[in-house]
Length: 232
Image (cartoon, rainbow, N blue to C red; front, side, top):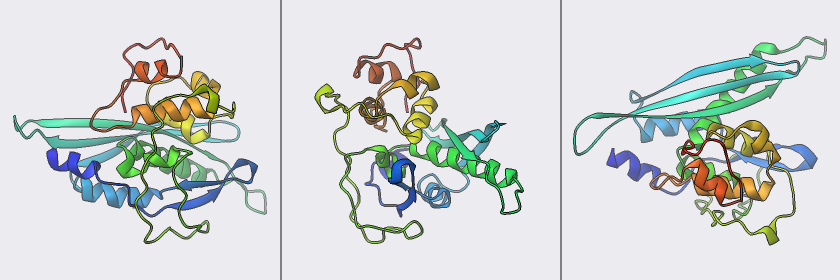
């Protein structure tokens, strides 16, 4: 178990891609298959598994919840320790030029999106820091080219909320999904500002000393109904 914790404490160093987002912005992401390869290295290929807990369709797309289950051995007692992380994902239903709806593709994309978000809940080593708006920018890259040879990203301190720095911007879909996976209801997550969501995620992401959801919410002046919360 200590070997896994040591691996998760290492700086983030996975290939980073970019995709187009709302308002012409570019968003960084880690491809799901890169996360799978990394999980095999960190946990061992036989020590983790995934389950699609939910796959639902709405008029525009699919929503998915995927759970990752990791088994480690406690160094002191020798007992098996089970750790789970859940991620929520979404994908729109696209159409071919002939008007055929690609539903199967959308359902798979929602599941892999959820899987990627679940991996990030294991901390910065799996790319959770990509949610941080204030991370230093690396070399530019295209939508299909990873950033090769870049220095590992170092997360800034986003755990303290400063109202003076809050411009009232809305949270991203990735931020909302991360907070929902942590136990916050979607309506509340969507009502936060970008800065508040970033602060909560920054407070929740520490693998060695996870902060519970209620504590993270309190840092942005939010009182939640679930006082125990679900730590990352």
